[in-house]
Image (cartoon, rainbow, N blue to C red; front, side, top):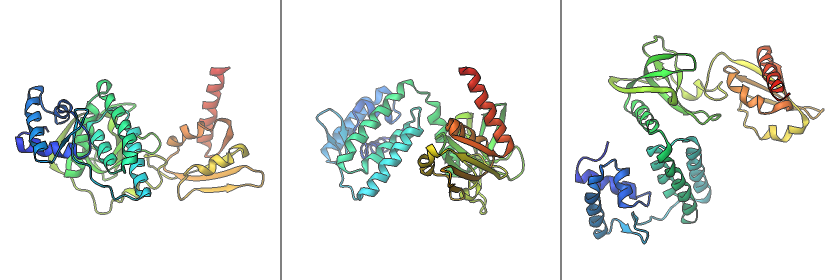
Length: 316
């Protein structure tokens, strides 16, 4: 919601300028204010500059005076890595993501802040070509989770459209496709088993007034412990046999704490994984081409073999 009063507007201005360099016109847009409020924003900036809370730069932009960072080099790299992962996750422009990127960037030492800010500026340029509904979806999902409220929406899966009233237990990013998912119970379906819902497939979202409660016995990492990405299900044992040529590459892959990875005398690498269903593994396995053989389970082996035959037929 845009600030409704002058006090709210100035507080929002200080917050934004604490982690970004912004012109008066861009500030008006970022605050969600109409164009006719530009002059009011300019007067706010003049007042804040006179009070020493904001400074005007040579390029016409404004910012709050820089504060010294207390991050050590490893902490700074962690902050930068978090910012880059956020950048790659948000393929479409999201105003909240831009703010988060800027706040993370503000924590970096000056030497790294400049190049990180350039990446943020490149992300901001996506605004003119992106669907802004993604920002609205993410905002409502976040509010439903953090405020403990039920979220109603239409869910467009690959096969059907269904009505959902979701009690959100957890929000997770899939490490494989970098998509955001909400984990929770659809109270219209009945039962207490949580399911996962991709945010990009949610439509017509409404935040309901009913309270939503996360059960005390729900542990997100236990729920996701068998997932290769985000999907869970009955545990399946997958056995893979990698050629010697890719031995070092296999060792670099984070296979999870329960994986059994053995280097054989022949130079091959045998990997055994226990996952909650093998469907999410398929793109990763196919990415290895002919360098890996699926030994089990049989239905996964059949699926991969069929995919290779289809590719062979396509390319002759």
